[in-house]
Image 1 (cartoon, protein in one colour):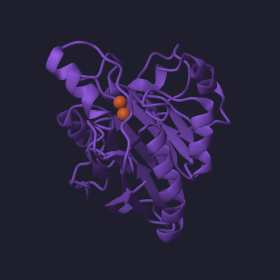
Image 2 (tube, rainbow, N blue to C red):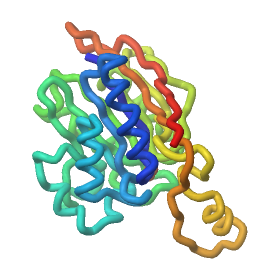
Image 3 (cartoon, rainbow, N blue to C red):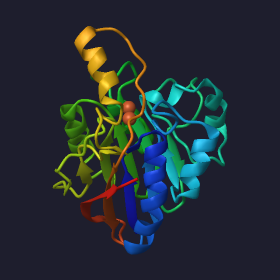
Amino acid sequence: MRVLMVGDVIGRPGRQAVAAILPRLREELRIDLAVVQGENIAAGFGLTLDTVRELLESGADVITTGNHVWDRKEFMPHLNETELPVIRPMNYPSTAPGRGYVDLGHVVVVNLIGRVFIGEADSPFATIDRFLKTSAAVGRPILVDFHAEATSEKQAMGWYLDGKVAAVVGTHTHVATADPRILPKGTAYVTDLGMVGPIDSVIGMETEDALYRFLNNIPRHLRVAGGRCRFNSVLIELDDATAAPRSIERVDREHSV
Ligand SMILES: [Fe+2]
Ligand SMILES: [Fe+2]
């Protein structure tokens, strides 16, 4: 099985880049499953039903999220629609809308969020531990999107889950890391997938807005930047017989508008 895991998609330019690149990649790389980070698809903040549908039409099979999942209140009820393959971090309180994993039969996708410089949540380590003991998790390859700010926390999760899950990929920083590898006990790992969003920006947002905030310490709404986009992802190949990860490699493209 060949899985493409795609970094945070930023607003309309990000969605357009996904529409232009993902269908082609699915064919070129013979992708069986595309997992796309969607927490920033709606003007950079959160998700809407329309933008989710757009990503699904572009070839996303599962959409993971993170700290921005609550930004659009109108989307919250849709997190409970089981036919919509959108998940939110599992280590939010169980009373919060949505679910932390999706079971596709041959593979399970899990979403977790970190706790360093990103807000409060239950321990992602204890949460995944509990999940791994459930029947939903046993006997199938598990792909984990660990949405976290700190590189150290993501590396720690990689080591913690090495040999227990098929893959741990980091998201949230919007900057791709050059460290994809198979860990010693067989788990595919990368610290951050990166993003699908404007290159001339501060993590996808207008440089002018970001600089205003940094220079003046005054809040200002961040607009999504424009222009050519990066498309950051990793391709993970799982052995068809054993489901063991065989390889993980970066698949990075550019999209000009
Ligand atoms: Fe993000
Ligand atoms: Fe995030």
